[in-house]
Structure formats: C-alpha cells, structure tokens
Image (cartoon, rainbow, N blue to C red):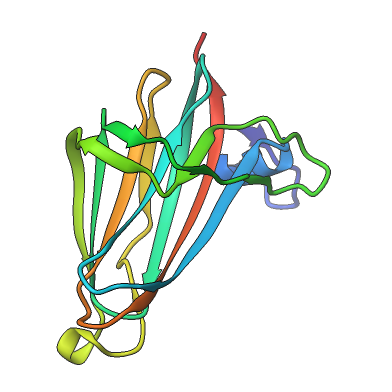
Length: 172
C-alpha cells in the first residue's frame, strides 16, 4: 500500500482492487456469450481451462429471461470439446494470450460439483428477466478446468447470457 500525500496530518493508505489493477496491467479478460432461444429443460455450458502454469481468477454473471438453474463443476470429461470463444482483453491494445474457453461442449461424466444456484425468473418462473443474485468468484487452478452449466426451466424457450471477467496469475 502506498502512503498518499494530503493536507490532513493523519496517514491515509490507498487500497487498489486487484481486478482494477489487472485491467491497468492489460491482464484482464472477458468472455461474453449469449445463447438465444434455449429450449425448456435444455442446458448451456461454458468450459474454461487456464493455460499451463497459470490460474484464472474469475467473476461470473449469468442472466436469463426466465427461471433457470446454475451449477458448476471441476474435472468434467467430454465427448465433444465444443467451439472456441475468443476472450477479449479489457484494454483495447492489450495482449490476447489467455485461457481456452469453449461452448457447446458435450459432458460425458460431470466432475465434482462446486456451485448450485437458482436464477429467479419472477412470478411463475416465466416472467421477463432473471439474474444470478450475486457475482460468482472462483479461482481455477492451473491443473483444473471449470464447467459453468445453466438449465432453462422457465417453461418456454429463453435467452441465457454469460459474462465472465478474469485475470491470470502465473503459478510456476
């Protein structure tokens, strides 16, 4: 922490949010993916794998037009690796080196469940709009992956959106 200069003789210390610092160091990335018209009871998945020697510090926000269930898993195996999503750096001229992120994966065996939450869709579950009631913050270890899974249970097809902000920290 740095000591600030000011007129008040009492010392004051500055605290910088690590996420804000990562943005300024050109090391903050975002994944933004919208799934349109997700059928009732269908799942959508986002799979995140940090690069070798790094861990990913993530903040996840999920929105849905109606009621949905969210779960997350580590150690899932897949029959279909899915389609890559290109994360972008929060600084427009920043480095693009980042984690491998995919959607449309086909889990063969779900790993260890970590998270379990409900996205409230309002009265009757079919009302307009629902947002996970808090940001989900996780650290993905360099030898693991994270599967984010949302199931639409609103009764009709709904759009589901993911926003994942993350920064990487070298571990080796």
